[in-house]
Length: 202
Image (cartoon, rainbow, N blue to C red; front, side, top):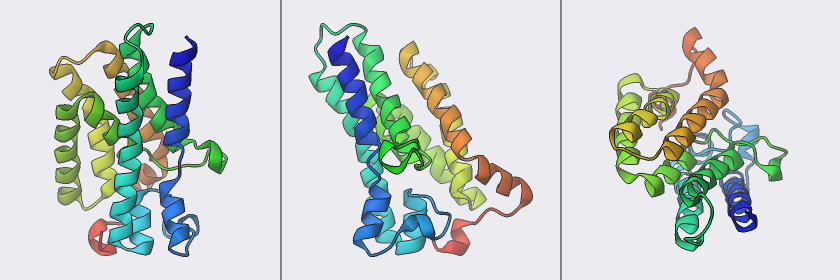
């Protein structure tokens, strides 16, 4: 199990790379001190502009995709429970983003990284979830609503597409973690205090 553990650990360390913070510092700002204080793409875009927000989005998505792709490509075919380990690598990347070792375990909300994971594990479910996200954001005006709805529904798409129990289990755990990290957003939505992307220009 040594090599399997190494892949999962490496996925966590890659997922923990705080691209939003690094991009912000290169632009001369600490995004943790402005806007929502989050290191994700939405806050980077709000604080530093759309271009850097999009760059952060693709970087965060890429680390989720890379973690799973690398496990698929390089994990030996003889590895014990290979399919489950690959799914765990995706989960580890998301946990790394949510609770990064480099930032004393204070990270982002995991939506973009989770999307990257499922683009590698189950591209169709990821694309369906992306459309759900975009539709919910356009209809509600809130990025958080799209994130919550898309993460909650992805296990459904995985089930309909006949994905493995390991992938479905990982998707449920990711959804729970994403909802947990959106606790403050949920509170603001209930109070009518959540910031709309229409007002912020995002």
